[in-house]
Length: 507
Image (cartoon, one colour):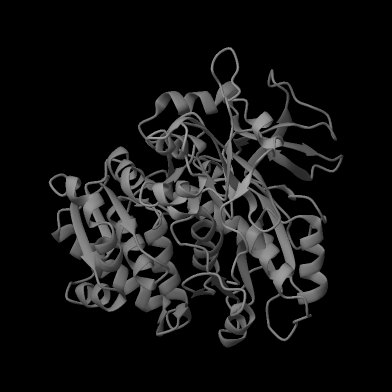
């Protein structure tokens, strides 16, 4: 049966000496990556990890992440990808709601969150590691494990995505959802073994996992791991590693085009793939840098992506055509199909088995609600033209999308309400030319409240990427008769808004 492990072993057999992963300190061939992963699989079995177990992974962009990830896949375990920015209740929620029995975590991250994890040490096997060499050496002490023979529908991954009326939901995807993403992505972009994909977005995200790692596994091209995105080093890194493409969120491209005004074509980059690229940035990437953005539409729940601009079918400003294995439609509030040019909700259903989410982990009601009338309802607004190209208009859901992160207002609001001087709170996203959206906290306060204390109060209670940029004090939070926050009214009201951050430093 086809699964990640069988695909990795097949790649190692067909291209054993070709580079699989490159980083500042070294490189791994496909044979070496497969060998380390199978040996690490044995080591994990020695720790008592077995098929079906949920194992959390909290790790930065380094080859150890991939070795552990493929090792868990070979056991038939489920990797719970943990955002390295999570702290406090948010971190503990991900670990407990996912039913994780173990956590693999870098020691530096462990030291920073030791107090957050103390309460979980009796129920969670925490494995802290120094870095790549420790993982490699532990693996090399073991014999290679046998290849996993599980079916393609076997659960593989839980990645948390933020909701708007509650805490984040864990999206459970199968081996086939990942393999299908890489299969169609590599064909869409004509990826070949000689390509090198630069990966600077965090590996715990769907974007690099499904767009980059799966494309490399499908084609045998190389991954170039960077610790983080940097405007000043971007093209130097691309030249140093001979990168030919990269994955993006809209923030990345907006930062490149706004801060690098001079043309730079002295590199091998030809294309990039992701979502959130406005037309003016799209044009600047092409004209200034000679790079074609391949805008797509996707989310974790739909197997990473469902429509995209391919090399053969490329339409400026659109999110492209649907993949061959899915059906995409635009519907009204009654789930009736809408004609070309009319905006409505984007809905998706599969033409092949196991390519969309298996469900939301331990949230059957949410899974059923999203699958109304046998379509997965994305909660996003879009339209299609006469030729079937999708255009994304915005998020019907209330999540805030800041720099590629899906942020739940509910989580920040809950933390704000613990402030002794805040009586009521609402959090909304407001437009931002770099990050797509920024976070505005709207608060009802007691006398003597100082708005500039909000960020320091939230630090350690929510992740750093959830800290509000703006704060606004009001007399009352506008709500409907059913007590739902009227977020649109708050987004449109800029009276007395205070910028807590000011000018940003260059990346």
